[in-house]
Amino acid sequence: MIPAPSTTQGGASVLLSTQLVFNIGFYAVVPFLALVMSEDLGLGAAAIGVVLGVRTFSQQGLFLLGGVLADRWGPRRSILSGCVLRAAGYYGLAAADSFWPFLLGAVLTGMGGALFSPAVEGLVGALDRARAADGSRRRSLFAWLVLFGEVGAVTGPLVGTGLLPLGFPIVARSAACLFLTVGVVLWLIMPRGLPTTAPSPRAAAGGHDTWACLRERRFLAFCAFFGINLLAYNQLYFTLPLELQQSGAGAGLLGMLFTITSILTIALQLPASSVAARMGTVAALRAGFSCIAVAFLLITLLGTTGMHLVPGLPAATGPVCLVVLLSLGRMLVGPAGLQQVQGFAGARPLGAYYGLLASCGGLAVVCGNTLIGALRDTVGSTTGWVLLVLLSGAAAVFLPRFLPLPSTAA
Image (cartoon, rainbow, N blue to C red; front, side, top):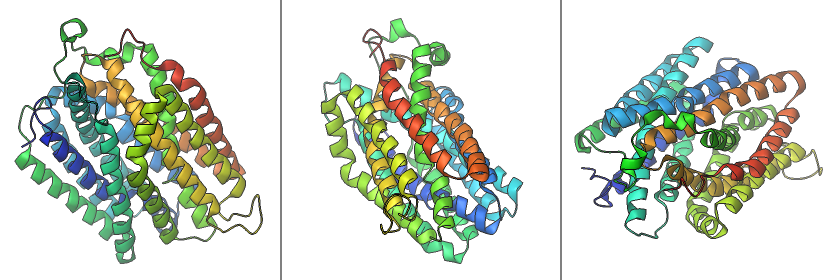
């Protein structure tokens, strides 16, 4: 069983393994949704952007609600309910043959993630805070969470690529079965009444106001700029597949690019976290978002054929530059940003704070994808890439100005 966060490290092992399996199921399906909607359903870029944006918002955008439910229900109930909902969504995607059923299936997959992800992150945050209270100087568990997630992210596209020739319904049903299996296993091993908040000497002063995060303007600004990180990453599922399809590349190249992204993260996430810790939070966030901005600048200049800037470049130069720099940027931004949430929350429940952070990311994705898709259908893809350069640059400049104040940090 998973022990309470304040007792042993065994709980971390189960949580990290859960993240690994969740990501295998996720990345076996989601990277190929844009291709399926374009090739099998005949949808345009705007419609695809809406589906992917709504799917992300139904997950990330509902993280605040999911975090509140995790704080009130307990993480066990939230995680198990999320597994069932995501499996239902995948079964829905497998059966869908038009826009609206596909959208419904996508929404259900997102809602499942909105239930289980804040619960997992809240437990990891509680473990991380407990280790800090014990004087541990080991790497943040969030770095390990990202690492285990990326192991799943490198495995998932390979599974999806292998199953896709059998038809997308087989891919989606296989992922549904995986989530149901994980749910059964966790139902058997997770104890009831598992807490999400580690003991803190500030508990009496801080209280347990679930909705306090909505009243903290500084945290809201932090969430708004940090959400650009998720919007940037979401382009690997949205604009990049469409660009590759337009240039004549298939699902094989897309799977290879996801593999490159995941291998880089597996190899470099922990060293990058150490570098970020030495740099300090401000420098790490600025460097990370600057990398992301440069990634979008290069894909703007090179395109997916490598011919926009320097004729004769290999066709995959632009996409490879995009995924490499985007990965490096996220390695710096992710753990550095997630750790700041504990400073904003203090002794209050962590689930709502992590939930609001993800909800703002989901809102950024649904609004950003809808706008980028409309721009692509009307004036072409370049304008969307330029918009992403500007947004990432703005995050590099302004996000570090909204970190927790020293007087409020835990």
